[in-house]
Image 1 (cartoon, rainbow, N blue to C red):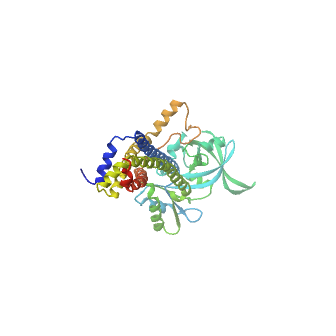
Image 2 (cartoon, one colour):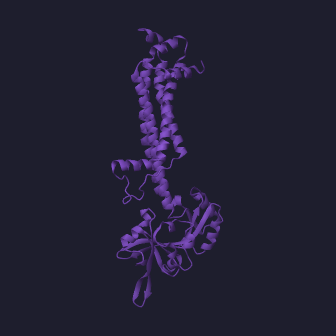
Amino acid sequence: MFRPLSLFVGLRYTRAKRRNHFISFISLVSMLGIALGVAALITVISVMNGFEKELRERILGMVAHATVAGVGEGLADWPQALRAASAEKPVIGAAPYIEREGMVQGARVSGAMIRGVLPELETAVSDISKNVKEGSWAALKPGAYGIILGRELALWAGAELGGSVVVYAPQTRVSPAGVLPQMRRFKVVGIFESGTQEYDRSMAVIHIQDAARLYRMGDTVSGVRLKLADMFQSRAVARRLADRLGGFYQVRDWTQEHANFFRAIATEKMVMFIIMSLIVAVAAFNLVSSLVMLVTDKQSDIAILRTLGMRPATVMGIFMVQGMLIGVIGILIGSVGGVLLADNVTHVMRVLESWFGFQLMPADIYYISDLPSDTQPLDVLKIVGLSLSLSLLATLYPAWRAARTHPVEALRYE
């Protein structure tokens, strides 16, 4: 016999055949319930991580990890800011830009955000060039007045590839005919689709020199956009750049620009974690009931062990071992199943769609038509830790009840 004694007896009780098969059934149900809850929790959190990662990549593919702008209307000495930013080790791309509001008129008129870029540098800081579905990114040439529209914006304005649109700037100019709005006709040389409605519906891209002429900015730009090797270092890089450049520059990172959006996703993820944890809690209640019935079934055995000198704490440990063993097996099964399901959730969704003849997330309605998944080891560890804690708590009352068994009362009718 090995020690501790409670572990030895608890394992023997677990392996032994029980007189009451209903107790074995309840224990099996408790184990499967814990496994189902853990698997569901891992899958849901992984899918939410996948959606967050997909949205983050799509949004940051259109915006910068960090931006350096002037305190006033624009950034005049942008080459200095470009050199200072490029000297930072995590920075892998930097490009100037002009971004102003405007109106795009095709068959209809629509408001838009006009972004002027240097095509040869912009590819290092954003994925707009990769998202051009029609036309060519290389067609953006200075003085040619070409424009690349988001697909939704092009559809709304009634613009087609090869056609032309008129871009109105929120400025006026004085002419012999009076005060006229600042405007310029552009040729549609491309249409991009980022998969994010915010940008597909409201963004148009032109060459930075054409934007400077349209908005009369001269050599001034709106700022410098940066791309980092690790986007999560953006806040530290922004602080270092702000200290290096001084008070005439304003440095912001993507966590500030989209703080509310990603904070909402994090809150939703936390709420889903709490809700799905209730499944594990319900399975833990089943574990309580199975252990209570087991304690009742083993009253005579407990009484005999107590008369042989076993301490109440040891009796308590026996039933805690049994409950924890059920919980650990269920958690292991659920963890393995949950990780496998999370890694293959897209294939499972497609199989279900083919079986039942429906499409869960139609591509013509949803920008993300698959179920992305991103299983984080830290999340799995948190779920396993939570499940172990609930299983341990579930064993306390039945084990305490077993420890309070009086040998005389238990053996009176034996």
